[in-house]
Image 1 (cartoon, rainbow, N blue to C red):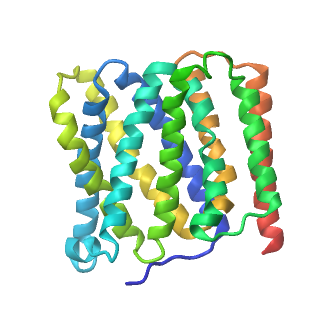
Image 2: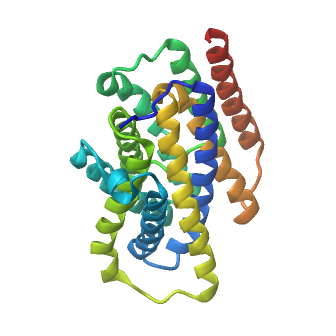
Image 3: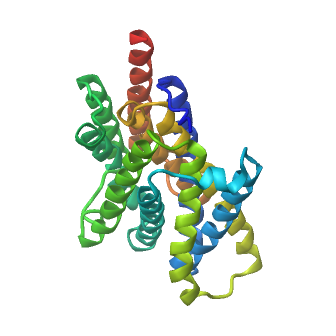
Length: 291
């Protein structure tokens, strides 16, 4: 089976930007739902839709579900699917403990973790310019979030654990793309996660208000679309090349916080967002110049 893996950095960057926008929207919706309902139930329902979606997509492909599900690395595919589901639970729980913005302030370190591990795990080259762009993006995030003592209390371990889990998921996704297609990885992400969450979430079922089922539906749609974009992104380009643009998720989260949760738009937020955008544009310019 052809993996379809390429090295189109421009397309990878565009896909990463799309994925970060969707994930930022998910964070806002998750904060709302997890503040009212049990986290395991919310994540379980999301994964039910996710699994149904990947099955429907697989059934329409050449050879049907059997062809898409065929993998030469089943333990890797199941493991990364379970890892992502567990990471989602940890992240959403973190929103309810330390808040959406503070969680993002800690979680934002995950691109640094990916870039740091891309060499030893994937054998990818990480040049000093990429490190500089990633570092600039991190500085921009610190300007925006101005993490205070409340961020670095013991509860900050929760989003930090989430960041490490998500970094490992991203690297495993890139590794899996070397032998399996995007469709196969996408299928196992949904199926493994749904089975894992169902074994846990059914024990925490509680009634949901009709208005919140609409938010739940939007969360389900964004969940399927976001992870498709992320898988395709890592198939298109090296993890270390697209990571500076992962900081845009924090920009989207900040916008959502201002527009939907009435958080203040401050000068540090504007300055920090400008630093992040500049770092991302510099990386894109460098990739084009070298191409």
